[in-house]
Length: 265
Image (tube, rainbow, N blue to C red; front, side, top):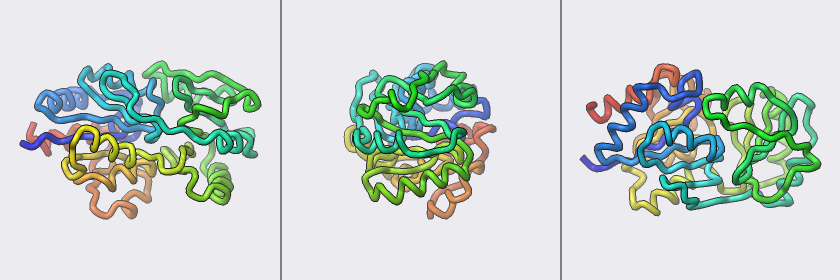
C-alpha cells in the first residue's frame, strides 16, 4: 500500500468533548505510523499546547500550529514561521472592542491575554498551557504568529467587519470556533503550511487524508485527495467543500472509526 499522510485538526475533530485524545484514537494512529504512514497535526492551538498530544501519541509527528503560522518537525525543529507585521499587530491590539471580548496574542513561545478568562483555561486544562495576563498597552507588536478575539459571535462579527474593511489581503481572517476570531499574516493558513510541508517531505496532496470541523480547516481540506469533515462541523463547511466526505461526531472518535475502515484495521 502506498504510504499516506494523515493530517487532522484537534478540537472538534480528533479530540473528544473533553479536549483529550480517545484511547482508540491513540491506538489507531500509532498503528498507522507503525505501518509506514505519516502523521501531521494541524491546529489553531499554540505549538507548546499541541506538543502535549504529540508526546502522548509517542510517534513521529509534524505539527502545524497557530493556523499555519508555525511548522515544526518531529524533533522540535522549527521549519517555518510567519508573523503578523508589527504595524498591523499594533492596529489590531488598539482596535475598539467590548469589555466582554478577550484579546490574545500567540507569540513564538508564549500566550498573552488582556484579562483573566476561565473559559480559555478550561479548554487547555488537558495540556497545562496557560496564558500570561498583559495589559494591551504593554503588549508587544513583534513576533506574533496569531491574534485572537474571543467572545460572543455577534460581537466578533462586528470586529471581523472592521478588520476586513481595512486589511484587504494583508491579513488572513478566519474562525476556529464561533466564539474565536483569529488573524494571521496574509497568505497564512493550514492549507498553505501543509502544501509547503508536503513539498519538503516529497508527498503528493492526492496521497493525503485530512480531517477538520471549522472554517480554519477549509484550505487544508481543499488541498488533499481525501478530505473529511465532522458531522459537528460549522454549518458552512459542506457548501465550501465540494468533494469532502462527512463523517461522525468528534465526541465518538469518528476519525479513528473512519481510519479503521479506510485502512482495514
